[in-house]
Image 1 (cartoon, protein in one colour):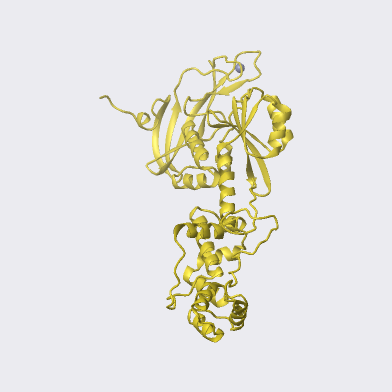
Image 2 (image 1 turned 90 degrees about the vertical axis):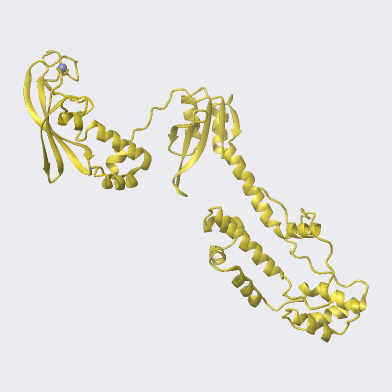
Length: 421
Ligand SMILES: [Zn+2]
C-alpha cells in the first residue's frame, strides 16, 4: 500500500492539495488549495485560461472526532475571455466541496438538509449543537425546498385538511394515494382554491376525501367525472366515534340487558345482604370511571374526553386523579337521602312474606344501608296495603328525556340514537 496523504483521509476524491493542518480556537483548520482542471465561466461556458488572482475562502466542513473543521481554501479567479459575455471574471469551484457564495461545504449542507428534513427547525438546531454543526433554526429551515408539483394530478388523489394552527388556520394537503406521497399543499380549505387546483392539474380519476362538503362541491365543479370515495381512516374514525357515543348513552340499558340475559332472577336472601346494594349513583360512578380511564389509556386528552362524554373537564380530571373507592364513598355520602328504590325488591319480598310493619321494614333496610327517612317506607306499605297483589314497581332507572319513543329493547330509556359525523 502506498503512502496516504492528509487529503486522502479528510477530503477523499476532491481536487485539493492540503498544505497544513492546525488547531485554532474555532476548531481544526485545514489549509488547502484547489488543484483541479481548467474551470469554465458559469455564464457562457468559456474555459478560463488566464488567472486574474487568487484568494482564500473559508468553508465549514463536517466535524472530525468531535471537533469543528474549517477548510481554509485557496482558489483561483479567472478572466472570461469571450467578448460577448457580460462576466469579466469568475472564481473556480471545487466539485463536491464548494458552491458559489456558500460558506458551508457541499457535504455539510447535505447533512444539515437531512437533519432539517427529519427533525425540522428547533429539534434540528439542538441536534446540530450537540454534533458541533454550525446551523441555526432558520438556516436549517431555509435548506428545505418543496418538491416540484406535477402538471397532471395523480390518478388517485387524496385530499384532507390540516391545521397550520389548530382552531385558527387550516390548509389542505393533497396526496398521491398510490405512491403515498404529498403532491401539493393549499393555503386554505376553501372549495374555490381546491377547484382552481383541480382545473390547473387535470387527470385525476378518483378523489379520496373526508366528509367536508367544501371539497365535494369543488369536485362537482372542477372534476365532475372523478369518482369520490370516503377515505378509510375517516370512515373508521366516524364509525368508531358513533358507536362510542351510542354505547355511552345506552350503557345502563345495555348493562341491564346483559345481566338479564346472563343470569336467572336471583332469589332474595332473607338474611341481610353483606354489602350495600348498588345505587344508581354508584353504578353511574363505576361506569364513568371505567369510560374515562379507558379513553385515557387510548391516549385521549382531558378536553377530548369531556367533549365525548358531555362532562366538565374538572369532573374528568377528578375521575382521573381519584381512586374508584374514594369516588364511590363520596358519591354515597354526597347523595341526598332519597327514596328506598334500591330496596324496593327487598321490601316487596319481605311484605309478601308477611312483614307488614313499616317500622320493622324501615329498621331492616336501615341495617342494609338505607339512609333516608321512614316516610317513603310508610307510603310504600300504605300503597301495598291497598293493592297487596300489585306492589309498586321500581321506577325506571333512567328518566325519559325525549318523548320520541324507546330505541333500545332492553329498557324504556327514551333516548334516541343520533349518529353524527
Ligand atoms: Zn463568460
